[in-house]
Length: 269
Image (cartoon, helix red, strand yellow):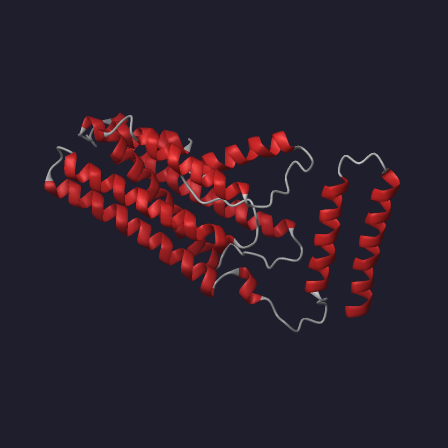
């Protein structure tokens, strides 16, 4: 089940205004919404873990760790907050929800446009399509292209999301025909889930991020700064020479970069 399907299920329940738990169909829907949200969060955790497994220089994110738990809670509660805000707003302002989504999509694409994309090198059309796809994902959750400087891109994303979510649930609260208790419950759930998500995010990055467990004096360590500089130069050279018909030049640059990287290993080990 996709993000929009979960939002649609919640939207239908809110439009109906009733939930009969004695009905088998309503019970299945009520159970499938939290199950799908938990699976989404868990899939994001799997993605984050295996991205680190693929990078031998990165510290690993272990399954049975506080860091993994906080990452899961962060993703779960942020997804819940976002989808709840979109669903309650759409239940009363059915057409205007696309305005909110469009604004968020445009802002997300602008942020993604400024991020370095290592996918589909030398194929600008595919890169643009890929950025459009990731901008769509950003409607529901934070998913940066770069594996670095995530705080730089996370701050504007979450500030915009908080403003949008608060505006949507407050407008719904003032204009909906639901009772006072239900409206207060929705407002409370919306802001509590967002706060729990942010707190989990901060704790994860401040206290339990895998990079914080790196030993600075490991005997098998090399000068990672030198590695990153050489790798960066090599990557930039590949981009600049991509599509160049002069294969000799590309081979020479590759050889120089590999030789420099090898010399770093020989000197620092």
